[in-house]
Amino acid sequence: MTARIWQATIAALLPALTVVGLARAAAPDTDPLSSYVTSISAQLDPRVAQTLVQLVGTDRQLLALRSYLWSAPHLADRWSWTQEQIEAFEGSPEQRDLQQEIDRVRTAFVAANPGFELYVNSQVRSLDVQIEHWNSNESVKAAAREILAAAQALILAPGFPTNRPEQAREALKAFLSGYKPVPKPTIAAPGLSLHGQMRAIDFQVHQGGRVVAGPSAASIATDWVAAGWAAKLDAAVREASNRFVGPQATPPAPWHYTYVPEATAGD
Image (cartoon, rainbow, N blue to C red; front, side):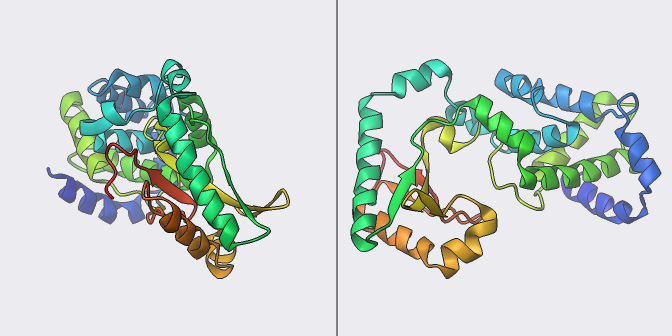
């Protein structure tokens, strides 16, 4: 059965699932989802399994696993740096180039907006920090709840090969590979964040030590759009540097830009 057919079946079954049925499916001693997650992750880069066990709850694990499946072809290149790689980056020519581009944007922004300044956390976001964020982020919590319900509906659906472990694993794998989370998490799955290789920069607008516009989805409409800081930041970025791509459009993050090193950036 294809992923599309599974999704259609799940959509039809979700309204009919009772709370009791879902609770039974989620019980630790009867829910096979955890074992499926382990089985699927074993087919991927070893770092995936090592990371999944640190995520709180099968729901967050499923949501992250979906991202790992989507990114499988490029996961090795994108995976966050180790502590040794982070230390090698510190003080390197690459770091100095990045800092120079950030400073150019800051200078342009301050010139256009007297009395305000840009703050940037120029520290690499380690895998441990990403895991912590994944376990506490509200958008992840909401999306994880939805994917768990859909996965539970899948394994309760008539015809699901529960007694054939390999087929069951592949059915769940196909489902996860085609699943689009709602709501879309505002952060990347641990290990996949561009902050983990210092390829993402989050700008904040400050005034006298006070955060005027920060990296918060709840403040986009008021602080970034209505107050005009999204447009002012974008203008400064475009004027000062050709090494930043953005801002991030999906999910919206007017403070988030991708850094492209000079070796690969287009003029």
